[in-house]
Length: 283
Image (cartoon, rainbow, N blue to C red; front, side):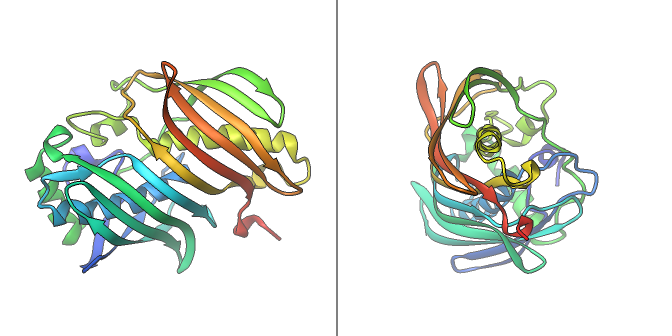
């Protein structure tokens, strides 16, 4: 696998592909310093994308899209291997529809339910012949281990804050220079990954939850469910996004928020998120 796929590629090997099912694996390098939980969803989405691109002879690729529900059950640590599974319900030049999950040691860590990725011409984003060669590598010898190192923490400036209830902030998307993941996402058209946007929003939602729920250990509160995800447009390197987080509901041990992101006043992404304790963090 070439140098292009070193910074934001989360499938090491495709182990099975038949009918609408594709399976694979990804090992988080032991040297990784920051691997957000959202990247588990990225890994499942990338596995589904490989199946869709191959089915369409690498003329089209899925980008952005919708996700009805993402459920988090546990967090992957450096050195652990994710077993990835995706079931393709529909695949054509308009869109791919799929569900999937990631497992750690046979136990479910993440579930994706009813996701849709609109298709766009591959040539806008990458060289079709290079993507085909990479797919062949993943099906045979697999990608080189230890490629990924980390993603930077989001650059966020708080602008409005009502403790436990509401946040407004500016997210500065990095420039392409010096940001390796743009070389993978994507070589011909760099796009800020939607999973990293959700990671930034989730971090702010966790901050509000820690203010609203004093009981659990602060480190125990994490995203447990994200629903109604809609990524409506691409975000280029260097863009400043306006982030919005509003409390919807609060109970004894969890909080639910509405999330939004805007670019020049135009909504580019929205979702709902639930913050609580993961199964593995509960006594």
